[in-house]
Image (cartoon, rainbow, N blue to C red; front, side):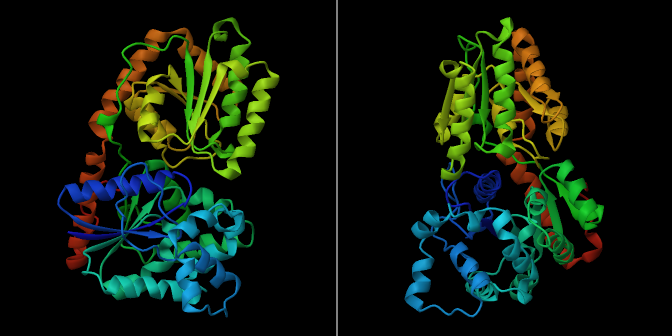
Length: 442
């Protein structure tokens, strides 16, 4: 099967959606499929070889921004080529207007308008390039926010469109009005043009079905997978109990909640030896937030018991997880999945997560940890304390979670399930009555 995968990049930090799409494209190739991965907006940032190597970036962030802001502007060819430089796009990724939800309201609405929006020149450039490639059997969109491309690309490629649902709600709900309401309304219209949806969790499947009016038979749940063999448990627990965090150093990931919980724990006899280890992506915009947390920990007299290790590479991330007693990323919003939970469990480390988003179903499936009340440092501290006081139980939870992740959440398991969905949808285009007869509708 020939598959075209369209995935937006971030330019300067790891993104769960990018990592999932890249791993999936590589795994589908390993299964014998011809996958063309096309980056959009900004360069993809991956922690393994990029499946998009050598493919131009389309709908590049600078051009989309200029078309939105100056719709009548016509740039000389030499300037237009310069704006498409990956190096320049990586440098531009730190500009808030290009990457933040608050600054992207007008562009998000325009992109969802498709042919009626301001980015028609960029959309036509993408369509023209794809026209010159071998025709695909299926076109995969990384998220529903790319729905403005669906009608034009289906017209051009004559292939079904399968769209992944993986966290669009938090982006759209972060837009200021009137763009938020406009974007949700347009998204519902655009989703009617896609052939099928793959949701990364039942949580996000149910949420998006309710908000967009999607029929159950058009949504299949396929959770992300990881390279489980790359994660191995430590042969012995760390010398001092270690609480770990591995995600972007951003307020929405709940690092502030974890810091407050750790300060509470450190004041208690049972937590006197515990350490806090923090790692993950830190963009220039995140650095100020991280400095504020360090000051909070210093004021509590805990600087010598806390370690910050931003921007680890793939191998260092695996080693980091091995040295933990318990893991937590207490996200403040309804996370669509949370691949970092799989990574911690694959290393045999139990987790403590807030009772919202996809975390309840993920912990129910793996049995690898505890849930606590969201956005509540006291509740988080109590759950962490529970595992720190009972290391045997913590090890049992970590081992149970690791066994399930290895059996059910590998990259190959994800690829096999996605492959089955694509084959079913492609067949249904030829025999429409077959669509919805099999699979795992949400």
